[in-house]
Length: 267
Image (tube, rainbow, N blue to C red; front, side, top):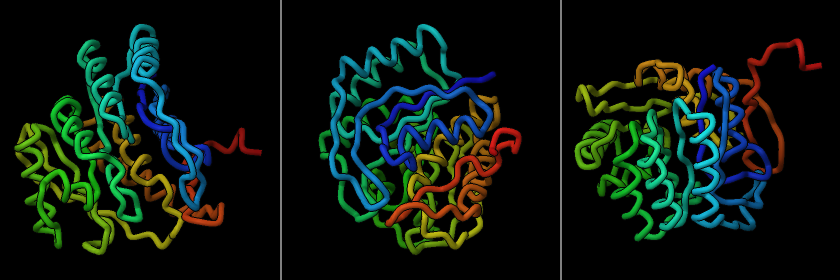
């Protein structure tokens, strides 16, 4: 069995973060492991408290994983602290990690910035260059590309600009009033630009969609799928989880990551 590691924060309500990552990786056929960057107190209505782990403890988690069950792919989610970003970069370099998918969680759904400017600079200088793919949404792509994105042409320009400046393949995720569910992939090795179209699913419960997509991509890369095939498979999985119509909580609830699980152990 192939293996994948998620490096991200914990979501106590189970819909996003580490919990979503582990579910998505498992349902995409790999053995999932985790290194936790922060504990959060949150539910479908919002985050009420955050406690970061220390850089030393994060390094210890990564040492424990890499020295025993070496991951075939890695997903990196929210890392809010500059020192934690450096700690991750150091360990990924030390262990020559491969198939790294980085979801640059910078902007909350409300539009609030989640990373300080120095942390964003460190992310761009130390961590993003180690990644094989980054998966920004529109607000995050605007920060990384330093430009406004108003339409699909802007998405293509931003993807190419980020790829050239950061030396990494880029998946700019649609939505945010630009298109329904279409993403653009720029592959740094081939310089190919590919539109990966998706279905617009009427479901307001979208908590953890970004975490889920990036984790599913990492799982597919772990199984030796190409980058484009990994993205396409991950989008189909995400659409299935959304289309299941799970409705939990008082706010924007989670998806059903296990929509396709075998029936034998459900009842």
